Length: 271
Image 1 (cartoon, one colour):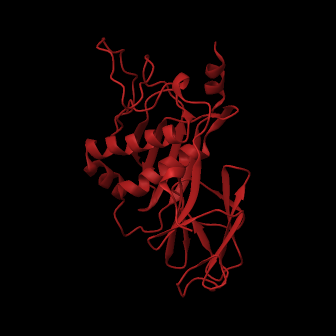
Image 2 (cartoon, one colour):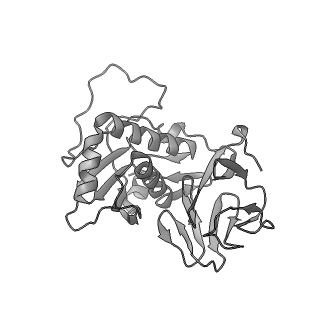
């Protein structure tokens, strides 16, 4: 049995619960895709220097209302969600064992807005997965692996482990605030209503010095609430201690939503 087989056996299913905080609004593909990408980031397992194994199978439990909404999107939308998730794995240089798969299931005890994502590593194909630009060979495909009857669709969009480069791409961390992009070029950035903060936020629900975003090492970023009046939320959950953020994480202070992004260096970011 190879090393990666042992790693896969050691990667247990990770379950994370979310609350969208907007139970009266319909579930949107973009917010669910962001939650799935964040779940992939949270569940990675380091394999060696610069390489990490990521989950490729995601079971999303939803309330009956949100499940019916997701079913109404159709196969094309679910395909695109899986494709975006796979492209995220490639951009982050994650190793993925098979196709990215998304399943929706209905939970009768969930309220609208509640969701739970279970992520795991599964072999979705007996053949290596090709990169997105590659063409599949004209051979008889292997028998598909049995899966629950949901809206899941396998996506052959992630490169084989052997093809993923060892050297990670240079990334620029940015915050998107009210349509503006701010590059995180300093170890510590403070946001708040005061004009003396690094990024002033014009919002009456924001404290003068509301939240701090800091780097940890070269690739990790955390958020800390600075004792604000109305609190700080990360992906819909109020934080009480230093909380790690990932590409696509949404930080909410007052009525302002701040999106954390990791973009390739040549895309640029405005300070």
